[in-house]
Length: 304
Image (cartoon, rainbow, N blue to C red; front, side, top):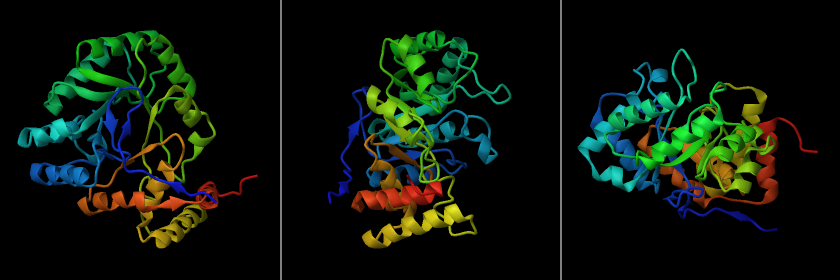
């Protein structure tokens, strides 16, 4: 039986021409006023081989901080250590407006990118994604706005987050540049992308897949009381973790990376030690039966 072997080597970010690591680090919980501690987390990600860093303008609100707080904190890190910016592929997102809730109108997209650039203290964002689809925005208008931002040099590549395959295809049909990425939720407990066409469409179009919440909002990393499905999934991951001498999170990341769409899990941890341990994902291999056993545990049912 052939094993599925994972590679830590950089890969292309879709058709953008940019090389990125097969793990990303996300800043949904990137918070606080301590710039030195924030820089330590960024440097821990680099030490783990991570070069793709994912933030968004709305990150901060869930931490009880203002809109834009996570970007502003990263901007302070760049001001403290400018070389860090040049070493990373910087991704951000926009299009969520608290109280609206979604706005992909051309005027707002231009405003959102300018505001992000100011907070991040940088001249460009390498990958900028529409955070969630605005059902009132025609994809032709959104496409024109994104192309203008690329022409202005404010963003290098564009992508989408939480879009359906049909929404992604509609936007691409009006773009004269290729979409670089799609960012869906994907974990052993969130497997809809395996059957709803998201990963299939990404492979067909050459999109990078950035998987958010790879530990299912932390449910897979913890040992607290949980329902039967979560408990069974943790147990299945633990069996594999023991086999390779790694922690459960590393196996969850590896399970995602093993899919042929080559998804890139976005780590949410803010612990430098856990960021370092994520690199253990590349010690893990899977027989097909082992990968499917974790899938069945996560689905809570046997495959036909």
